[in-house]
Amino acid sequence: MKEFKGRVVAPGQVKAEALVSHGGLNTLASFQKALQFGDKNATCGDQNNQDLFGHQMAGKALCLPQTIGSTTGGMVLYCACSMGRQPACMLFSKPIDSLAGAGVILADVWLEGENTKMPVIDSLGDDFLEYVKTGMTISIKEDGVVVVE
Image 1: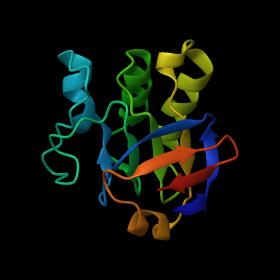
Image 2 (image 1 turned 30 degrees about the vertical axis):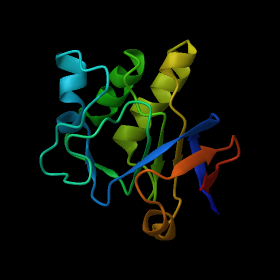
Image 3 (image 1 turned 60 degrees about the vertical axis):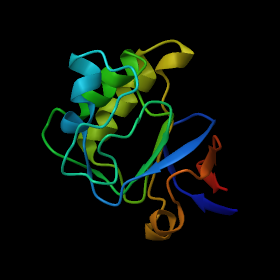
């Protein structure tokens, strides 16, 4: 078990299974099937991300360095939350980009109900992404502490 401390972007406590990507998350390519075609598991559709492609993202602790892609990134994350198809949490090794951050914060502020929440912690460091593996159990606390078991 190891603990990492990051910056709270969207607060919350959660315990979930880790899903790890060592490359950036293309939000539109990854969530397109979930948003357009009703995939409630949010199966990753980004063929360029071999760590995530074909894996269920909904309900997982999504661990990644950063998001990549177009200016739709924030809206995609907001929509995933509004439809209840978001990861259990998003954990960034690097600082979150402004577009993804905007979508996450708007979802946290504007949406109501437990099934729309997605805690987000960033700036966890490269050591975090080197340590965590897909399938490990992750717990996050309100103060930005991430526990990996």
